[in-house]
Length: 406
Image: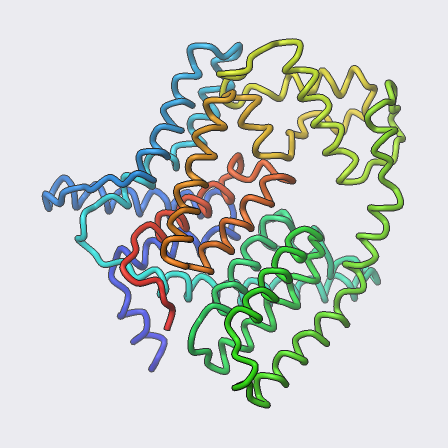
């Protein structure tokens, strides 16, 4: 089947939803255009075609979260900051609305996930080629790892790109029937994920893959081809993982948690690790919460940074750390929208997790676990890439008839 014939198999809604995901690595402007196109198409069918909408529990929870963000205008200390935040959070309103069109188009999520996952291979290949050229020109192998590698895609953060790669790996792994191209994509994305060097994402992906292997395979019926593919992937992973192991060793050796918790003046030259900085941010949050006592509603959407910046100054941080957010989604929500906002986020996870267990959907379960964990180290929904990815994938999973990927 030609590429043109495959494209023709997509209805307009499937194509636009796929575009939402495919444009994520291309930057804010391009992805925003995709969101607008998808939303305008939905409005057209509702207004001119009189298509009815059908709200789900998940859509209502996403709406409630946006409404809480909107209401925070009444208690925020800086209305301007909150208004700016609301413009970025419109995806919590318009994407659920666009997905709520009742059965007008049958969106087959496996088709959308398939084209998105294969687009990741193209992005990874491009990023790797550019990284190789930079490494040769600058005589620095560092361009093949972490942020220097992911930065070739519109200055993309390595953690966010790692999340996408992990999702693609899980998709190909969960396909019941894998073509040679699928196996190639699976191996290539796995190797690229290792090069991105995100310790937590690599660990989650590896663990979920091992669990999937033991869950799905009948060792009495295992074939030589399966053994060869599995052993090859493990060997390639081990060969490529030296940088990953080194980063874990460095993190463990240089992070002094007790010192971070007790030191009063860090100075501008203090050597911070990712773990150490996040421990301090948790400490800063508990101090701010204790001082302000804004437990239920928080400081207002997009209005927690000033308080955190004051803590950076109080502990004599290097000025370059100013405007670093909490790097923890749960704390970020609690700081800005209080316990009410955190409760809504947890209800979303609970609802979709309940679905995954009810339908015995291991792919969905893997996705939930991935996002739950990455939210410990990143304010994932506070960036457009994380927000659009999370909402789109959730709403696609929520449109279920049959979750098996053929």
